[in-house]
Image 1: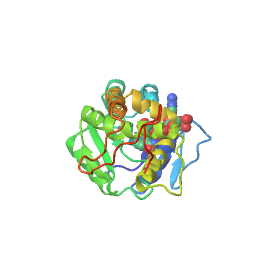
Image 2 (image 1 turned 180 degrees about the horizontal axis):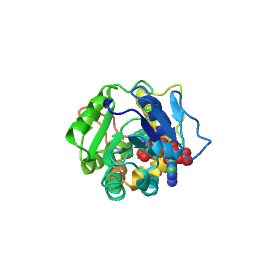
Image 3 (image 1 turned 180 degrees about the vertical axis):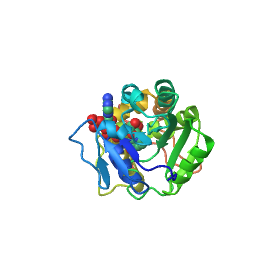
Image 4 (image 1 turned 45 degrees about the vertical axis):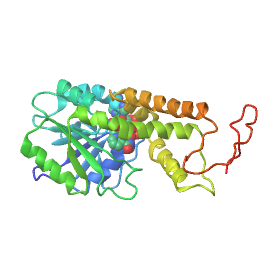
Amino acid sequence: MPAFVSRIGVYGLGRFGSFYARLLSGLAPVCAYSRSSGRSTPADVTRVGEEELLGCPVVILCVAISALPEVLRRIAPRLAANTLVMDTCSVKAQPAAWMEELLPESVRILATHPMFGPDSSAAGIAGLPLILCPVRIGEADLEGWRRCFESLGLAVRRMSPADHDREAAVTQGLTHFVGRVLAEMGLQPSPIASVGYRKLLEIIEQTCNDSWQLFLDLQRHNPYTREMRQNLERSLSKVRSRLDADPMATTSPAVESPAPAEPEPGGSGGSVP
Ligand SMILES: NC(=O)c1ccc[n+]([C@@H]2O[C@H](COP(=O)([O-])OP(=O)(O)OC[C@H]3O[C@@H](n4cnc5c(N)ncnc54)[C@H](OP(=O)(O)O)[C@@H]3O)[C@@H](O)[C@H]2O)c1
């Protein structure tokens, strides 16, 4: 932690805010604010009111992506000069632009995306990626934060918000989309589950504990996810067309196959080996 950081304030105690506040408390004293009194306070974290939180030298926003503009408008006039504001949104271009537009010139801004959460870090955070997209911060300051996150064992990468969103539309947007689709299919564990099938169930576990709002925001606020979904649908229909067009094809031309059985009316013909 850079030596000048006496206290970190985490704004929002949803699924990620609670997890992150706890994680950061290993580096510096952490206080946290939630607009909902029902949210529990993580161990080693001090619960404070909004005014006190905004007095911290570093304010880390862990609110829903779609709520960020509203929260920025709310906090902007109350931040002291030189406060460092970081977001943690899972998309980067829009939040970076919102922060630059809505926060006063006197405030420093670092857009971040910790690419892990309470589910994906079950086995620890070592080697997991954290993306930094500097918006309004000096190089020395940025380097201090890079080292600080690296000291937690994270793999820190600097990227432009647009490059992040382009890549995350596939690595994260696709994973979450497929997770929701697989959950919709009602897949269940099976005593004869193959390793591959178990990995499909793992995708459901890794994605569907997050709030539906986060899923919506990931898909709607990343400018590249629409293209990813179109690509997925095109690929699904291509594979289905190939299957429908050639139901009797052997999978491997190298293997000599027996004469095909007469297909059953309306069926795909043959039995599953
Ligand atoms: N989940 C993850 O694994 C993960 C990983 C990396 C980054 N993130 C990012 O972390 C952020 C939070 O995600 P999450 O998973 O914690 O979602 P979540 O569980 O749905 O929590 C959303 C949080 O935003 C707060 N919030 C929503 N609207 C607000 C408003 N108008 N004013 C003030 N607070 C508001 C909620 O407050 P209430 O408690 O009052 O409802 C809650 O604390 C998102 O930007 C997400 O992209 C999440």
